[in-house]
Image 1 (cartoon, rainbow, N blue to C red):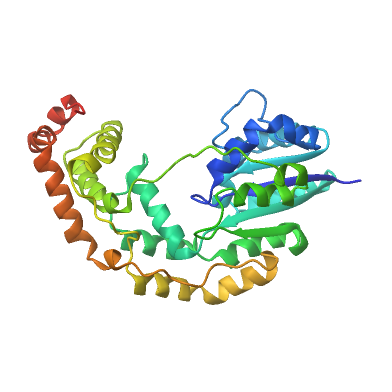
Image 2: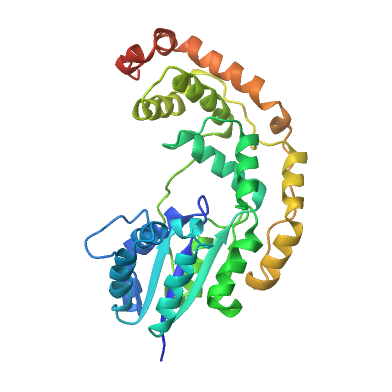
Length: 340
């Protein structure tokens, strides 16, 4: 009987961290169910997934690194689960295709499960991560959307077409993550797909991870980040100041209640752009599931984003004179600034 290897693929902001934290914590229970979820030797990074270093090796075209990891995973008994958000960045590379062919040539049946959020919801989550995380990005959301359009990141049907090409339509499964669904849906969906029904049907303990700040603070944070970049602030110091902003702003001012960064019409138009791609995705890989088709109206989200953000940041700096003075004094003064 062929060995089965499951690949769990992000995308980013599609519950990957939650899923991977669960898999690591329950690795013994998974082993009892005949499914191995182990880290490559002594590399333990549970919130990155056990396939993170394999994805790194594939991206770098490090043949020795790939071979070492494939030997390790292929040598585990029974069914093997390999999880990495980073697989979503290398799905269309020749080295990813070569890696899967190598697994298959060594007797493995490779199956893939991918998680997706609808395009308008995903791009907002992506933007929040770019602003709040340790990334240099400080341009408006319109520029990030333009970049993702050029990269075809939002063309989910195209993404799944590659996985189908590698493993066959019957071995490629996509799961939509929709608003209002149970938070444990991604974990339960994965468990059922890999045949761990006993775990899927039982109680689950999940770890909340990588939670985004209120939407009304994201654009003010971008403007603050841009000010810091203009002062030549080091990345580590910028991250500290931004985290302090997110932690303290709700207690210092009224945070805008907007739920979305994009107005209703732009969200609808973005998803409409991928109507055909989403239809193919749903038909081929979602097994009857689909993205929700309603677009929630939110009057607060119709307010122009940048003027609102400027007002919020101005109010914050007025309430936090030390940071305001530090911004006026240049990078060295910023570096000496400490959170209240």
